[in-house]
Length: 333
Length: 258
Image (cartoon, rainbow over all chains, first blue to last red; front, top):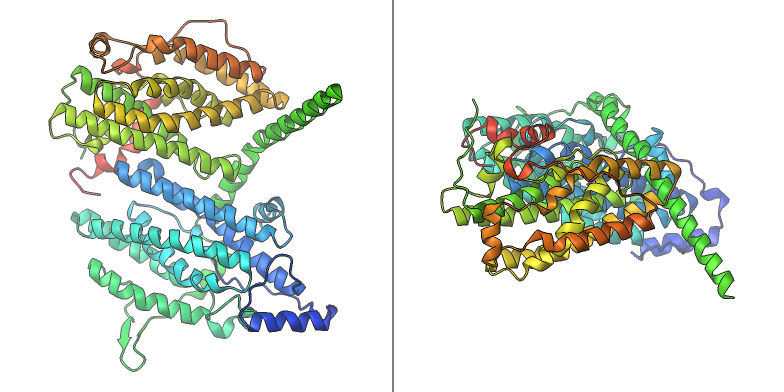
């Protein structure tokens, strides 16, 4: 579903590397050429991308849980099928992205172990609970909407496999976003209870969605290097502003009220000014102290642990088959 | 406030479409419960895929049941506003997922029937059922292949997977007899060429199961005692819980549009 600037510190390893190769690499990136898996790349570039792509993959997989929470309770068969297909898409994105990360030399197992061991991060937004059906609408509309803002520039990312994965992911995300908005339209045209449900969902998801774009630019620790490498094309604050500008008119069309008394259109800048974000809440959720962090990790660990005997069985069967084929070949020879 | 369940005029044709629709919805719902919790991501995808196929089949069969009934019902009133005693699915498909072996054995037992069943139903004299069959046959062929391959791997995998697969067979076996259930209403439809006689499929079903179990080094149970009742609304206790979850929003907010 989504990637996020998480601002982990990174070491500068360029001084160890060949100056000529490094210069050629920088020139290729500057000329908007794609870097491919077999090309030489600085260790820090590899490390930054591995971290970003795997966090993105983890976010897709953990992101299946809050929406999956409503598959068995979707209110019509059409909504049930659409939600199940959507969560399946998220899983597909996760698989894609793990594959893209593998082209940088880390296996899926290794990356998943980092997630389950609590060493890797995933998007903060999935640590909030889905309490009503309207949350499914709000996630599609707002969370996928924010994800698209983040991900469309990634379609031009300098690393080829990531950029290409993002093209397909973005197509599916924009479909999800329309689906989510359509749920919100239906609720906001519905009964008083449904309208209240839609408003409540907007109230709860709005601020966490603004946090999805990461810390404000003045606090951002490594935006510059990623920008120079053309991994990141816009700053956190630029993307956040774009999202607010796009979303405010959509909320008005729904007849919903933004949960921000300071929100107003600025004639001078032609943008919507908005109130202060609670960055302490963001820091807490990233540090593991959000409402659902423990539940999300427990669910992923349980699926992994409960599935161990199945994966072992598949491996044991494959080994036996290989041995049987080898025995057959020995007889034939 | 609760919404009352709907009344249905159960003609043989309405009943026939409802029973198959209920099989597809309840099994599809069970498979969807795995989403996000499967043993590997590839299996999250596959289980969701099969669930989507089955929910799609349920929608077509319910729409046809509603049309055949000619009252005000829709696919959604049929799915969301019938109580446990009005559901007509096989006991097999409402059984809880259990572990992955149990889910796959349940799928094998069902799909080994559904696959030849839908192929045969492509020849139904009822054009709507024949069209639904043509689509469902392609899907069930994949479901059968997927479940068979997994049962073989689990049976011939490790000691633990073998034990779990054999336990699943022993626990689910008594629900397989109902696959071949026929009542008087069905008999009339069979006579008119609208439905096929499931007895015709018993041989091919048994053969498929025997082949898969043999490759999986698993045993067919000795007991031939079979539990029935789903087709007449005599369910296990599991179905009520499934429906209370599935129907919760429609029951809590009567008359709302979603």
